[in-house]
Amino acid sequence: MANTLRIIGGRWKPAILCRLMHGTMRYNELKKSIEGISERMLVAQLRELEQDGIIARVVYPEVPPRVEYHTTDLGKTMHDVINAMADWGHMYRTVTEQKLAVQEALL
Image (cartoon, rainbow, N blue to C red):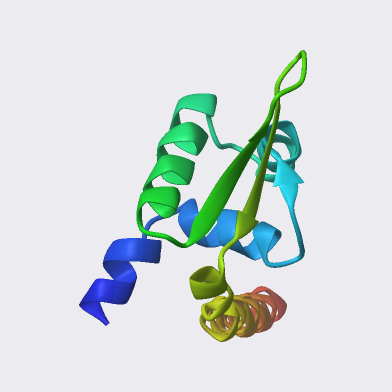
């Protein structure tokens, strides 16, 4: 588990991987789809995921250059892990919202 968290842990990597699980994306598409992430942080996280072999970066020799990111075969094996994290997060939010609603109703 420690190795998995080293590779995909943190605030932004799961969000990046979740989006790339749905297909190839350009840098600006990723940036716009992840609310609150800075350019510096996105670049750093993409580089780390690329170095770990989870995603691949493809640069097309065009003017202006087009850069796309996609999950590698190794990255695709994380699909179930990312989905499980997302499912648990949705469940947790639902439970906490229900508790809050009950508390507010008692007031």
